[in-house]
Amino acid sequence: MTTAFVLSGGASLGSIQVGMLLAMAEAGITPDLIVGTSVGALNGGWISSRPDVDGINGLADLWRSLSRKDVFPTNLSVGFLGFIGQRQSLVSDSGLRRLLKEHLLFRRLEDAPIPLHVVATDVLTGKDVLLSSGNPIDAIAASAAVPAVLPPVRIDGRDLMDGGVVNNTPLSHAVALGATEIWVLPTGYACALTETPRGAVAMALHAMTLAINQRLVADVNRFEGSVDLRVVPGLCPVRTSPADFSHADELIGRAREQTRRWLLMPRFKINQADLLEHHHN
Image (cartoon, rainbow, N blue to C red; front, side, top):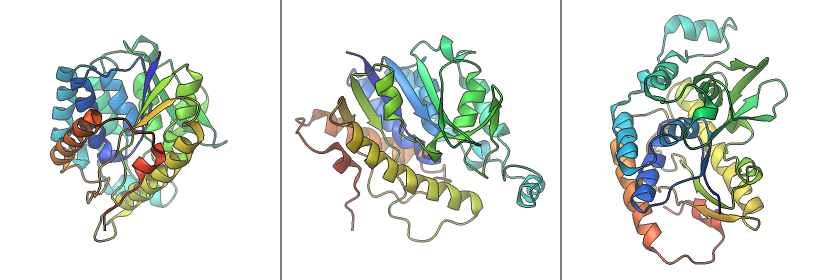
């Protein structure tokens, strides 16, 4: 049996994945391979070399320390140049690259202790691209390059952007890589916001997470019959914008406790896509 973790994108809601990962590590569930998109690729890069409880606690500490400016450093001149078409994004990816440089423990994707595969999107063709070798900082930065928010990354002659544009939960890649048991860790979306997100970055990220959830439902329905597929239930309600990093501790704690309870429950034969539905009033 080959076990894969599939980690979707979701910006600051990636902290939810950390709580899920912590509960799974405590239960002795570890991957043979990891497929990640956007923030899921970032989390995957960490756990590929530190998959145990202590390692994931370290990832949780990192998330608790993050602020929006660490990941999306705003600069009026950069934003203005992006607005008038002189740059390809509103925000620099310097913050993200700094985090990756400080915390990744391997210099090439193929050197990751647990095989790590990163999904990005070709800007020109719209096709998804699986990155399994090369510079991990470039690969993860490309996978996380939300269109118009963060700049695309040029790899092997192609400009690449956020993998979530076409394939945010790349189950097809996990299956093609030989996975027979696949755990899907969704970040979910801010299903209980009381007002529209403020600012271009927050609005773009919120729209992306809504699209992610819809694509995930379709992918789960497509592949559920062909592999042993397990969708870790997401949090609901979520009132945190994907651009807001100040609630990481709360989201990690909630996701950990919910996942621990879920793992102790008998496994019923249900439609896994139903686990993605939000049922709050």
